Length: 239
Image (cartoon, rainbow, N blue to C red; front, side, top):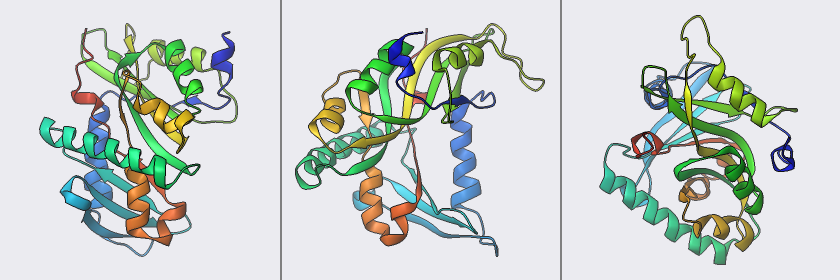
């Protein structure tokens, strides 16, 4: 197998996900709008600076705090404002916080082939935690699936299995992959990592919002698990 693929030693495939954007709706309703219980609490929905995004904090007994960041995925103007503000924030971070580690969600301008994506991530020194690929079912419906981190993996094999696999609930034989569209993980605020992604025309958005929200929330956010929205579902990656 290609050595570039072997260079990322952690990924496993999750269950079939037919429409990922529905998962975002569940997050909004089930996490941000959930009433507090003895085992879980939330602080409601908070607006980010300039109203560009909203974030919610969910606390689970014995587990890390979760912070979900969302913006208007259905509004192209709002999404572009979010992207431009993120790019400006990133440029400032390159000057004010060099060397710091940052959680990010990277959205590509179009789906990338496996080897091309892996090479780009390697060049930008990205530490991937999950990969989302998109494609079409045998009947032509859009679909997507996510591969998550695990101690051992073969990304090429898992991507093939994700396309050819089927389950009792949702047969997906005949699925066609368009490519990889989103990567979640860690980068370094540096020219080799963050700036490398910012200047690459294949990257639509390298999201730095987690850094800003960490400062807004304070100490509790330092070890929080972040979930950032991606506009990939509304992008033009069709046949």
